[in-house]
Length: 241
Ligand code: URA
Image (cartoon, rainbow, N blue to C red; front, side, top):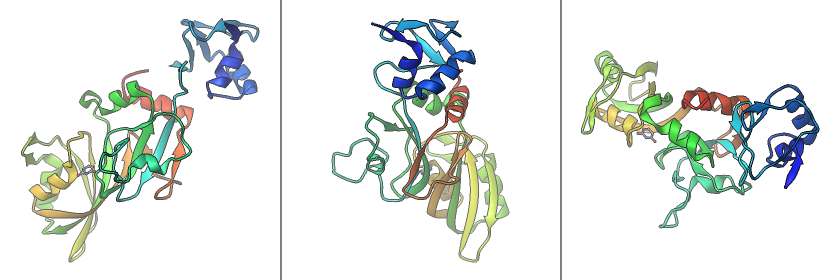
């Protein structure tokens, strides 16, 4: 069935009808690889490949992208067989079938992306793209200059040497210290295991940045939708632009 292009774009949830018209006039809409600038154009949404700013619009289900500030105590799975609380319970209004992009331990808090865009999710999690993740860890134990240096250079874990990391001491206390660490690998419980390898115990862990996105303006337990620009940036980072 043929429909006007602006109607298809707005139904996909990308923009209002008027904003979709502007997208077309601005030359940001492509149908089957060709730019379309006239408003009268009709096409069949079930057959044509329509993209806005290079991002294909999904025919079956609108693609959605959220940034969640996960509190402790929630599991990063879509469902939990043992009935434990999952991160998806924090987005009750979201009707699409979404999944978390990777995992945070149940007792880790902070930034977790949630989407139904499987291709983007795979790209962001693929080791090839070395997506940066920054954590703030509250640690106990003897945190020395040497251990900070070692964390930055790479420590030997049971699954091999960790890649170089950026490490910054935020606060050195007599009992507890705070350290910011940026890694671009995604091994299981990596940050906790790295600190353990240098004789420190992580008492609290928070992810404060992921792929260039931060937690600004999103309180613990809350979430927000990503902007088109942010999604485009993620596509670029995941090698999909
Ligand atoms: N590293 C950890 O140890 N835990 C997380 O949740 C994330 C990174």
